[in-house]
Length: 395
Image (cartoon, rainbow, N blue to C red):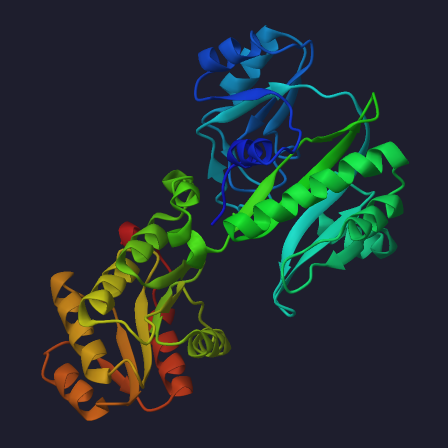
């Protein structure tokens, strides 16, 4: 789960990490009021969306008066911010963060991230702050310094010092930096975070360190242990289809294509999407019904998929194991009848209770195209959806 910069900075402050003073505004009038309480004379207005690259897209503006802050907020609020991370559709800005400007002498990069290959948290530091870490890795790989925590999530001070001296900090800055790194690690461990990033970590004009930006991602499976973190979720930032799927207990990711897919198991889902692309079509979603799905969950997932106006046909690829084929079949029938399905539907089904599942589908009266293999199913749905390349809402 992602959170906004302003929320991450509030978390940083609670863990003793220095951040600029600021406030959240949802109108230009609120932004002006906040600016009037900041020291000035330089202030920054920042769009609050779950995406990086805001500055390049016009979502971060430096202001030198209260009037400029008000004008900047008015311009940013309501705009659709398009960055490399948002995709072409962009994200609408509903709120801005107004903060005190900082005298910046240099910028560093600092992060605590989960190394999934090792199952351990890793601390990363670089003197090339302000850049995407991917660009730093490509252009200046020798400028990225890393160290892993031990199995007890412990980072020793000497490890932090090595990272910071590698970034060219002096002894006083290293001393403050060690405290910041240890606080970032403490936050990550305490809140089940998979990423805690500061980019940039500024060296100010007086030589101290300040976190000018903050990005924190959390392991969603850990949210039940942290209701305070779960409460930070912003529904306006998530895809409405994905939000509905989460509420239904279904794993769903919306994609850019037009063939809806329902599969049980992440590996089979990935293979199914590959097969669809190989057949010359494009998947509209990743939908993993999982092994513990019940009839109602399958039906709700199916309804969510069909509610996407871009979907022109459905491919269901089920290998029954824990999730029985008859349960999936009944869920498909229930959902198709509820939404009055008129789209092409291809089903490939094998495994536990497959004959009963096929019987339910055959006796449903629905126009269902059967396939005996994944590749055959992909080819059939590609052929059935190839004739119509338009949006269903425009038909």
